[in-house]
Length: 252
Length: 252
DNA sequence: CCTCCTTATTATCGTGGGTTAGTGCGTAGG
DNA sequence: CCTACGCACTAACCCACGATAATAAGGAGG
Image (cartoon, rainbow over all chains, first blue to last red):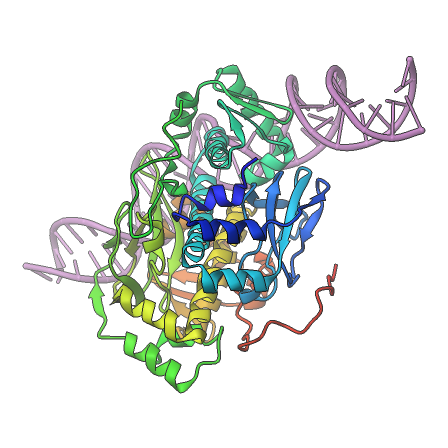
């Protein structure tokens, strides 16, 4: 399996051999984490930087009444807390959803990368900004979209993001999360999540059965969700400007 | 009037005289922009960096059906597009809500700052990360809070953010936005926004009359909104202020 | 002072989705 | 093989909130 971190960051920069070597050196032996384990809790001041190499984790906030809002899904190649040192305390928690393989990177290593590898620095910036763009899109989705389109939209996003790290096969992928977790991410009840999932299944658009997602008709799903992948910024960009090849959305 | 940029960034770093001078040099004569004008549109590749010096602007997304979701309020001292160069195209628009005074900063100036002024660089990082934290809090709010608490929560946030740039007086401030814009930010209808605003007024918690907001009972407002300011990271942090507290102290 | 236009306010009615309260199924563990 | 438990799925009822529409109230310009 290709290193998902390099695979993802390559979208933002054309790495040299030296860049690739530096990034590969970062990837020490990952350690396994069981599902539904906290990696970082609200108020923590994490020492090292955490990187997801396999499985799915999430950022979440717990409301005073105990409800949970999932604020981001963390897929292979995603950093959990690249920059928190600057902020001090975590204002949210991070937990695994599925069994995960995680890597802890010493902050000094990150500092070394950002001081000596400009293309990597740029790529890390890019990753941060894409995370932010996704947050904005989620706000728009939760604020404006009906629940069924909200679900469809999320699956479009996850499909593309997983595809860029090589975790899709055809139009299927493994999504080891429960309907409860899906509901918590979308700001709907689990009951309604189930209703809408059944609905999408009935329309032969997509099926989520257990941990397996199969998009039966990607075009229909995109159209239904009114999904536009722009906010993911997956267009390959060479260093001094815009690339032209797209890793992303041309599939069918 | 004190420079709101410096005022805000000072939270993150202890600036030297040289830092302050550099930041003040950035503040050339601002230009005025009428209300409800686009500053940047989706798809643009802005050349310069835009900074709000006075008034209120917003980030927004337009949905396919024409509905608008406001994704952030930009207050004095806030950058509109500090880092977009890395992403390429804007995935959202930015527009003034009230009459604004804006500054355009050449990208080269930003590069100069980040190369030669480590404390400023750190502060800019901090500002970016706080923006991100606010996005997360908004997701949680829209996803989980009832409309009345959502409103109350937003006013708590705006109060504190305006206060840090010296735009509050007692517990009052000027908020030159319409109920429609408020509704667009909170993901509710204008009618419901009005209902809930009336409700808060009736309870003698706060009053929004035209452009003037008066918090009658801040404690009650905070309690009602279940507001905790942690996510704004307003605690002053000194330079190597990577806390000494051990990683434990997990509290609850 | 009057006109026009934007914004605030209120009322009525309909619905998307929440809540509660189940049943059934698949799987891990004994 | 049986039990237990998490998770998927359904059904009934209800309410927070959306849509529509009409009225009032500011405020800029003449």
